[in-house]
Length: 69
Image 1 (cartoon, rainbow, N blue to C red):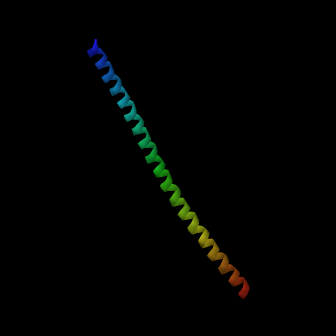
Image 2 (cartoon, helix red, strand yellow):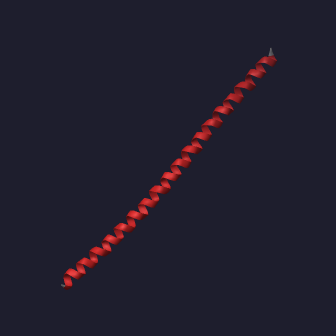
Image 3 (cartoon, rainbow, N blue to C red):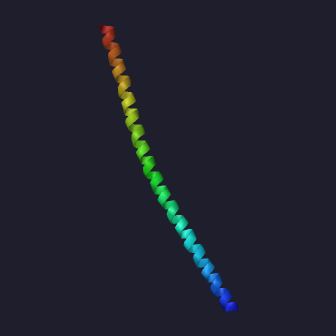
C-alpha cells in the first residue's frame, strides 16, 4: 500500500513539474515577444524624435529666411 502511495506521489510531482515547465515556457515566449515589441517601439521613438528635431531645424531656417526677406 505504501508503495502505491509513493508512486502516486511521484506521479503527482512529475505532473506538477511538467505544468510548471509549460508555464515557464509560456512566460519565456511572452517575454521574448514583449522584448521584440519594446525594441520596435524604441526604434519608432528614435525615428519620431529625429523627425521632430529636423522639423524644429527647418522651422528655424524658415523663420530666418522670412526675417531676411
